[in-house]
Image (cartoon, rainbow, N blue to C red):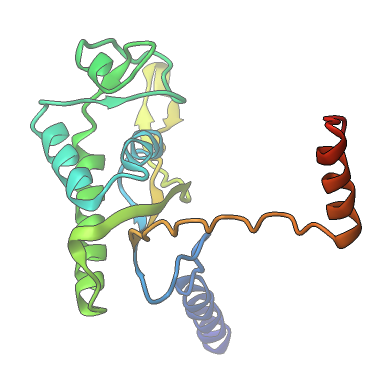
Length: 207
């Protein structure tokens, strides 16, 4: 019995080690990007997803300032996908909302701000230019729900589940746009050149 318990415990630790090494859904340029992630965060998945989409493609300094203003309730997070039952606020119009629905998910904003600061520290260690970093990739996934119970009338018990999430962020330095070279003009063969010269001589404009 003791041996079986030891084997079971060893199998559980092996599974945890396998899940610890999680690949990112997208990879940036290795020399120009820095990554950070959070697993099983105790914040609502839907709130975190809307918060993450609000800062996607933003510059790092702009994203940090935006989240700090959301925590202070000076700006709101626009709810675009998970917007059932979400109230309306005048702040949503300033963020480009068409339905006026917005909230101030403080817990999600604080968690995401911490992940951005972690990624910024990783970028500094790699020697990247922090001022030119932007949110190249951000993704939120559902985590395994955690189970609790709530007690109802007449002796019943209902589930009281939490909805944690996984978050991954990749910051990348802005790349300068390379100017496209002018295309070389089409080379004209000797035969076509003689035809053009004959047309000019005869005064013809037909191709």
